[in-house]
Length: 297
Image (cartoon, rainbow, N blue to C red; front, side, top):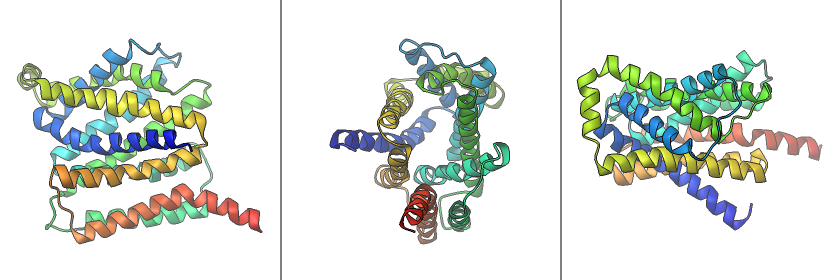
């Protein structure tokens, strides 16, 4: 990877890692469902001027929007309201890689490798350590469980992604942009029943410059720029070269949350974080090690 492309990779890592701090700020200004709805509405309004509507059938767009957009972020935003620290959320959400593997085996009948089973066991052990850290931490069990649910919804979105490709359609930035229209609908419907019309209206009329900046970051920086640069790198390099960059996201998320939000993490949670990262690293690089062993032998 060239120095320029490595710099682009670092920009993605920082944009996605700091995204969790920005979400925390956004939840101080809006309710979870309203933040999600306005975020995707802004994304759709801006992105539709630059990307043509995809040819993907509407039912697949709905599946993609409900799982990857509404499910993931609705649950994540709710988790952070109910006691999930932003830094830990950036790490626990990466368990989507483990859920994706499990769902691929169950739904797509893909074959799981021995090293992947070990990776799942290690990552689950780390998540158990984080979840069982005790009452001396700022994290609540409800927040932790909701974050795991968000990760599983992200994983279902990944399965939808694979199925869309298998059907011969493209799951690129145009799908992300245009599915945002569909994602905004369940967010606003949920806000109507959870928050009520008065709270929804209050959120809208109190949008100020800082709230617009937050929505702009979530829609433009984290989504359009982040996924756009990621797609660019994936088009130039093998997936095995680009994918490991995502391991830097929770590192940035944990660091920025500690520095900006002054979040603290218990020693047991740090141990769990390290164990989870080891599982994710094994899941990411285990295939390469297995290939090298075959080549040597």
